[in-house]
Amino acid sequence: MSYDAIIIGGSFAGLSAAMQLARARRRILVVDAGLPRNRFAEASHGFLGQDGMPPHAIMREAVRQLGVYPTVEFVRGEATAAHAVAEGFTVALGDGREERAARLVLATGLRDELPPIPGMAERWGVTVLHCPYCHGYEVSGQPLGVVASQPFSAHQAALIPDWGPTTYFTQGRFEPEAEQAARLAARGVRIERSPVVELLGRAPDLEGVRLADGRVVTVGAVFTAPKTSMASPLAADLGCAFEEGPAGPYLRVDGWQETTVPGIYGAGDAASPRHNATLASASGVLAGVGAHQSLVPGLR
Image (cartoon, rainbow, N blue to C red):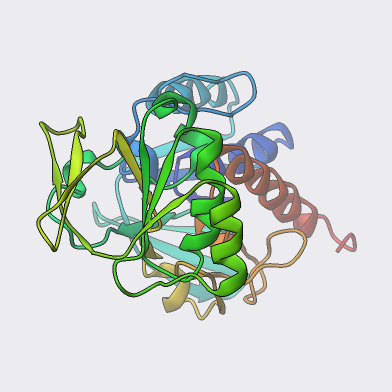
């Protein structure tokens, strides 16, 4: 069976791409393994009309809405391989099937690698956070920390005082430059140079952090920037080019989200250095519209 497009990844970006193609009456297949990057968060915030809704509830409703369109099919499972063939692409699925499509939309997401500090992983998405715009309001009004993991962390630390009194933990590696230090001082940010070695309290709650010199600093939540990598090898296997972002690589795309391989579109966190539910959804819209217009002879 042949499709106009196969969308790999069924979170905000992939489902947004699917909606555009469905409304263009194109035959599409959405393949989703059920492991979205946002599965650790209890609620999605800052997403217009969806503020406070659990991500899984938003996606469940999106799937219900897409189910109204007769040209949409879903597969719960993993896309294990993909290849370019004459007039399109083939996608191998975990159940042994192989499907063919004229276009691919890769909304495969990213994998986060947190700093290797005891207590980080079990608090991820609750009191260990990456985006103050997504989660800062929920932890505001209490002492907060930024655990540095890259040079950009000093910029992050300058933002956080809008949510609470802030300590910037340099981890002994990311000392702010003079201009950054002046900005942090103006914002009332305390700089702590002894590295954080452990997070304290009954997870996922956080009571404080233990430093390498034995001191304990009280914080109710910490922000950090995890390293990111592609959650799926498909884009690399297909020969798509990447850019290097502050946290890790992301797909190189044009204004319609098309990758460097014609006919393959990237959407969501995998195709942007900026990660946010609204931005992921918007990039999915662009990818879906771009893929549709590329299917219209002579249009693109």
